[in-house]
Image (cartoon, rainbow, N blue to C red; front, side, top):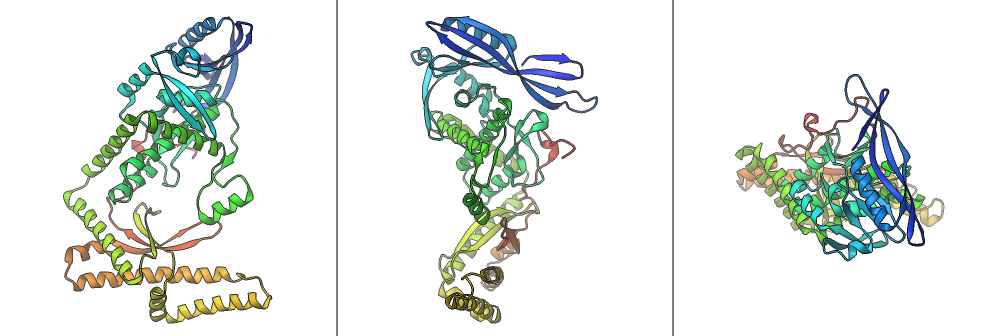
Length: 482
């Protein structure tokens, strides 16, 4: 990238575009470049200020002339350059070579590989420079997610959707919470980053036997591609509109009540971009996915190297205690519980126990163990039904009171049952398993948006199983004013 100085503002040419209008067998074109402006600080990093698009040249001639001028411009400015021709598009890299294309010349060349991509409802055929794919494999293959934006497939998909395109490293950052997978730092030129706290949470779930390496890498790759799409939005000065609560009121309500995100606006287009990248890699470049799995395994090995043999054995025994508790519950009540490993706000992991249904054996247990509370629950339900039948109040007027009482009983029942399970382990003289169960501490998790739901959780009280990250190990840190 080319740097230019102007007073206390530093400028950098990020990417260029040559847009052409056909005139018979010739083209009349305009070359423009997007420039980033940075404010110089006497101490500390420079901060991003703005983008500006500038016309840098006019180009006249045949398609061959335009291609030659694009190559020259890209090399001279040291930036990637997109070229819009009559019926196709191509991307020239900073070395002046075609990286990706939809044009006939590349379609007929043995040096380019055809791939089919799908972005949302749109399908396209790309032709990727085989040599550039090999360069990526040699230079960027260890962590495919970090350098996903340098792969010709990603760049080709970007070329289909953006006027200005340039690769960008997806850095690692460290946030206080795990809930944000990734983000872009506007202060640093909309630099894309993955949250290491979230990634540690994913690795912890793998160690606990919940997630698999392949699925974990797909999620990391999708996160990196999603944040790179946000960077491209900013580079092309596309105004951000959207969010994670849907595009209309019904979607918003569904998102809030279920706790499930529904992407809208630029979040939706970024998700579609990420899906196209992940699916395209799976279908055309399985070596990228294999390397990604190896990367995840190496991340796990690094984590495990910090653990003693006793700590590793403790984790395995706790996993066995969890499995045995699940079996114990199913024998008594059937398959009525949903089990999930979750990250807790204090940095630990926990086993969330969602009570899906109340079959008769479980209701009977509640009647005997918590008679007054269960009687109150039945009274609330009966009052609700009576008001509806009499037409005096719409059915469900007191339903929140009913659900609160039901959630309270769920929590108390699961915690009580876990204590009974541990007592049985003690009586059975399974000392190792009983000791491991002591690392599981009954707690309550509160989740939801407008509605707070109380869920029983068994907190895994093991210090080394912690999702919190070290800010000093991050590639990029949030600005001090955060």
